[in-house]
Length: 313
Image 1: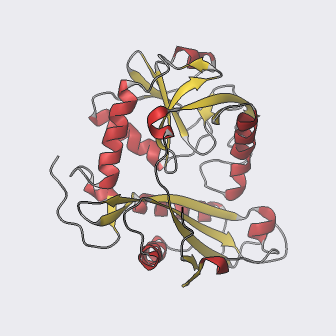
Image 2: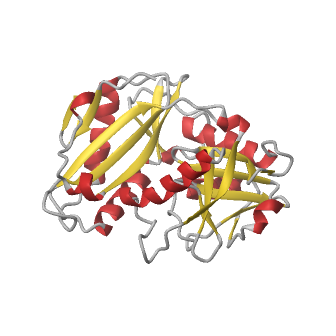
């Protein structure tokens, strides 16, 4: 995967190696930063790239900045304009990209500094891996999901993600692909940066947003698509022991898209293969993201403006 040519720093597109911040900033020393991950999906027939649910991601970026009490809120309109400019400058075509937008405290003086605010946007090619089709293994982590009254996970604050990092490192060391975290009540929360779904007796189930999880845009998307597929999901508490009864399971998120889970704690999920509801959901999800269906055109923002009319469903 080639290194991108450019990165956005504040109001300038600069060479990749110049995308730096000072080591004494509050962002570097104390994790005083928030971010959004956005996917750009390439449609070969239309020769167009679509940013998926960009408006919703930018709304959440505003929420996270407000939550962190920034002195300045960088607007969705500005970030969107600069993101499109960056993708065009890099000339991304023919491959999907993953975009990371970070607003950070660029000031010095300690962890309580709230400004000035810097902006950094990176975009890199992100080809799909075999895990999407083959599935992954997960471990129920010994690390507890941080509770809402400690470090609220609704805000995408960089420092929050150390919780998931520890769970991932443990899972990898123990021979798993990733982890499932339980919350302070012992209920299933989510993965390290992605939401969890299971299917039991044909019914998709996912932990409620009060389970110390991110209010995920991909999760919201999946809930709507499952409803449209005729298999609406139930949002409720999930016990650890109930994981053994799952017929199917998957993670979802911007980076993870819809990734099947085929084993948990070395026990096969269902038959150990990717289940039928998960497969149907994947197909529907990718059709919508890539614009190979006319459905939900409002979720797709064109980058190059060369797309023809969306194909009929």
